[in-house]
Image (cartoon, rainbow over all chains, first blue to last red; front, side, top):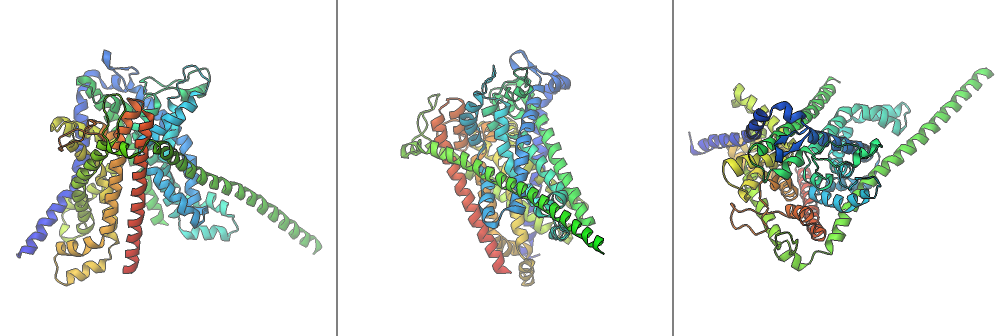
Length: 300
Length: 307
């Protein structure tokens, strides 16, 4: 075998090694985070961690239910605000905007995706929090779920908008022609033909947005107040729920990991395991939906 | 006969009315979609404009070239954090680029090969693709937690540029792999056949023909990764330590611009300086976006020329 043929073989195995590095990293992430959390799971008990509402490292109380509630509440708020805007933006870009307008809006959406999370957090601290503080409810500090939901809605907008736009664009041109030829207006075509046809991709985009929202860390720490308490309405008006301070799973890890030791550190890794599990489930369901979509297209 | 034609006239009238109603409904919704597009652009202008205007007043030559004072004063400039940012970007990409490009080359160029008949290798490839997708969805803080457990604690690299860069490499790996894969797929198969027909080996073909043709795509992936390392914070918050001094070796702690912004805003409440840092970050991100736009335009131009 000549030298260059041997080199060919060697290179192939080197490339193969780099290809499986991703597998090793995913496994290592799962392994190390879980290994560090074992102490907490065994000493405190799974139920105590998952359903305990008190997180007070000083007296060895490590319940993360408040953080689960915080993460879910702020994600819900962000979805409520962000999804209509993101879908509107996607429909606008894919079906309505003339090319010249698209050339402005699309880079804008891309830039929104690129702006660092700490910049959004800072903007929230300096602009949103003082504004929200003006709402006259006792105990309202400005920091809390509302500020965090608004910031997060802007942060997930580009993710959802760009995936939804791709899904809408992927709908075959024939569908549009067929609908228009039947005498439907453009808007009827969009709502009754294109959106149903692109439904899977759009839903997948929203779910990936949820995944992003659950994983966001720094901006949340900066505007949500970080009290490790169950979010609750501040007055008899249930809407004041969103003025409540909270803490996210991500924030719990980031705020305390640098000085935590022993069982406290292990409990933070347990928080990481819960977050990791949530994200894996969310992302896997998005992938599953995208895959069923492909199947339908083939069947047609 | 008369009855029938009046009936038809009625139907026409009803249809015209219905059309009018639908058209009115359409104008309402289309206007709303325009509004949504406008809101999105306005949010961007509001955030970017505010940070640039507010932060711009804090930026001057001294701010950019003096190190932060440290402690809780919030005084001083950002020179060492700019230095650390570049240091970390370089180190991260030095680790991630060869791995990512190599992985993409295997997944695209070798995966369909006949000699890969073994079931084991085939299943490894589909698992690898699944792993890349999974990695792409894992949030920054989880990479940080992993880096903290493995590099900072277990391997005892401490809070250091090395720990942060290794964790950062895991974070940007899927970006580099995906963009490189796309670039490789865009290279016409004729190139490969032509080279192989001339007697070149597979690796020679890849290295001399396919890789040069896909360079702009690979560069796009690298620039995207630069942007991620500059803007990600959570991962480095738990691996880089946060020293405000200039690191002199890869075992030193440091803080990137984004981390510095966080410390200024949260620990010292020095919002003016934080805005200044934010403005520098936003300018960097805008430049990176323009650069990506430029390179990808070059890429599509190249492909068109080929065809």
